[in-house]
Length: 335
Image (cartoon, rainbow, N blue to C red; front, side, top):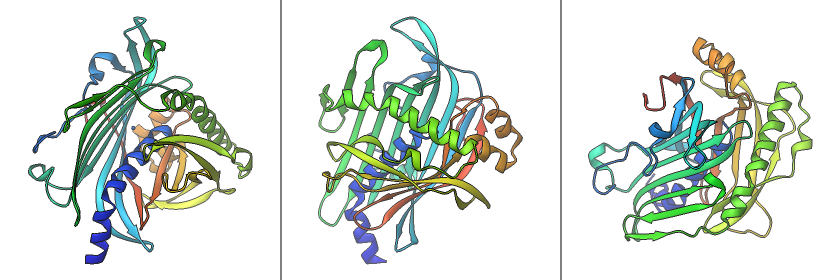
């Protein structure tokens, strides 16, 4: 176990990137100094701009480190909060139909131990997706990481915000440790261009699942790009040709399985991601929860719920497994 822990600590900076990337993928498929931890994403007051129409969908995952098909360590918990409502566009003065997605990723130490010990990761992400085409209007992120390896100590504490509201690109990154600010994000326009591709992919797999067909070959060769390892990396997505059964929440779910890997020519840039997803309406029905069934009939028509996701590291993998799905009264009511 001592060897495994040493290897894990050495890979912890990459692990933090993996966990953040996993949360970004979850968004597409439905995303302080000392001991003070922010409860909301900085520079993002959704209470003034977002008006919820329906209860919030809460999806919780257990994040574990795996080696040789074994769960070695429960690393963190990840929670997704998804709400259907309307967003106020300050530029036009209009209220726009949209989804609000908020993500929490927290390692398991006590509040007083945040920023101490071998590793401490507490990330927040928020995004608004315009309906009906799921176009991201803005993205806000807060990264907090402390890693103490055998060789060095790594501390990260920054916020990022980018927006296409008002038809222009805005980007700000604040490094709260170095007290530095950047306003230039490489490949920003390319990232924005992916919005239509994500919508097309989700629409396609949602329709295929609804038609009870196993012929998924027509959606292969799909590519999505992610900014990772300080590079704009295209990931090729391959879908498994048949529905796969997955044990989760004490039941067997029929899922679509896909694997995404960096395109040829990008060695060492990113790692392979695998995911098992199913439509929200189907998942709600399987839970037999009246509230979830009711919500599925009202919203998230193309929502694909990741029941499990894995992100490969140089040694081992990170697995996110669904452990709870329920409703909350609003985006602030977070059990």
